[in-house]
Length: 115
Length: 116
Image (cartoon, rainbow over all chains, first blue to last red; front, side, top):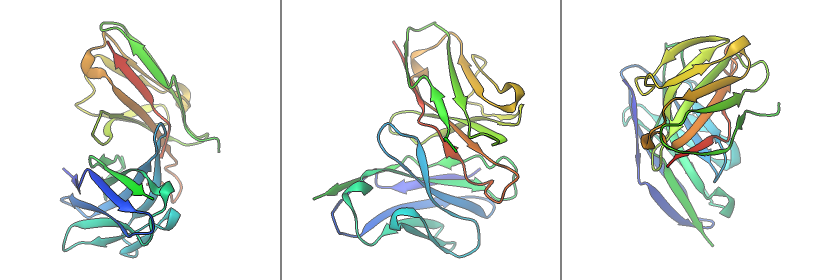
């Protein structure tokens, strides 16, 4: 079975500062990895996904994530935070080789951006 | 694409009542997923359909829960004899299996259920 651990349920940064949201995964087979963002009263929106091509994945809104197999990590970064980045972020894993593609999510990290 | 829609957005019900939620996926998406999200937690997989066939159900889906996807279009999730523990956000997602984007699930805004 696969699982995801997001370190830090709440991260606060200043506008213009680096954003770093941490995600570690556990999977018995090579995983697919995802980051989703959820704004208040909205559904989840896919930011980016790792599918075994490049280990550095670029997503929407200036976010990127790096897959590190040795560290079983998939941390999300953005060089400069914007007020509009304030939201909840979820890391998720899906099993490679399966056919259901169901997602297993972490508990989420709430990002606050201070002016 | 108009996106995934869910109805209602909010539902308040008394314990013991039955409730039904509807999800309309992106047109022509053949995969449809249901997830449940409780406060402070990430979404948890409940079940999924490929076209009209329900292919997998989570152990979270007790006998009080039933989901359908007639004709492979919209889906309904019914909860019978609701309990306070059923209070959660119910999320629907869809994807197109036959494309190179099968991994990309598009989520609806969710239905927030409150059981009093």
